[in-house]
Image 1 (cartoon, helix red, strand yellow):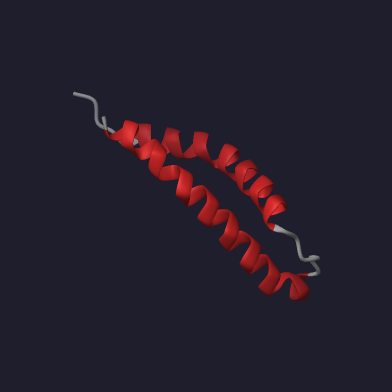
Image 2: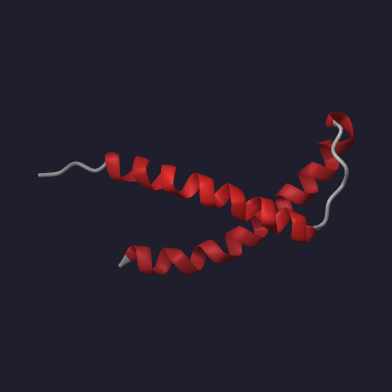
Length: 68
């Protein structure tokens, strides 16, 4: 049942993490040679990162459980 309530909680975190990515990319961008990008590009990059990381995080979470 906790997974059911965890899914809606991930929505706001997705938008927050996209905003944080945009802000920090704007801060360090000139130092590393990145051009500034907008919120939509940040959303696309965030969904790409989440799609890549989610299976690995799920596999790690499943491997940590002990089976009786």
